[in-house]
Length: 147
Image (cartoon, rainbow, N blue to C red; front, side, top):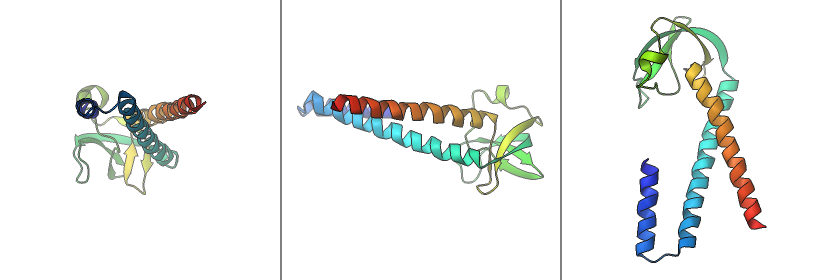
């Protein structure tokens, strides 16, 4: 949401300073393309972390804020060790998604010391597919516009 507000403020300032509409549209397009590319790289990273993770059964413990995270996340118990989920917990749906002491299939990344729970797994797969599709579409649109 903040991104859209920033774009609107920049566009209004450009109009006030009489910058051409073509340049404004080109700038917004470039910023959007860079965001799509950044999102794609992020999901590619998580997708490969997921590929090299080990599928294992884990018990959900609680929702808490880890020391090095900014957001609250789910904690799972795997072989006597607690691991946080890599993605934040959906605070609105905590009571719906997470059931205390329930066993879940998670993907454990021992090297990074976190897990991908079923919700993070779904987010990674869908995010990877959507962001890759958006990147390919943006590249194809750019190439057809050049002709």
